Image (cartoon, rainbow, N blue to C red; front, side, top):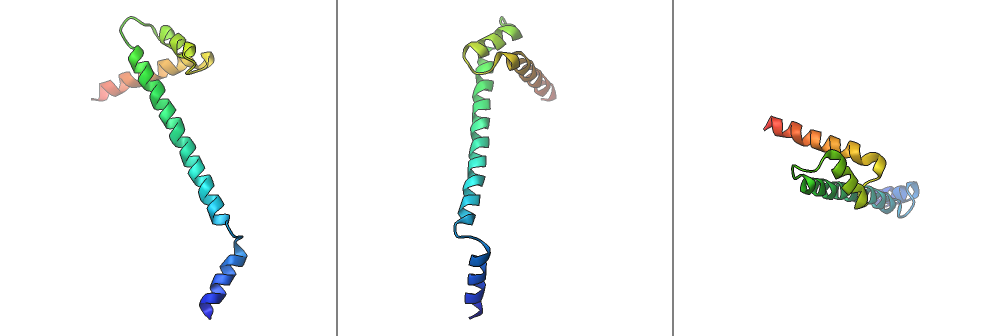
Length: 93
């Protein structure tokens, strides 16, 4: 009898399906974060492919804009940050 009371009490405290909605929102947020990480990884791989010893940072930024991977306002700073991080990581090896 006590189990029935507890079960009924939980149902009254939380509307039916509320847990499912919370789980869907959490899954949606995780999915969005995963998508953003995947896009970032693709852009980084593309930038790595652009490194050939002849292109400048501005040339690389221009290619990113031409390929519509990044807005012009962000491209040069993003390339500089990426190359700086690559250099710093190579120094720690």
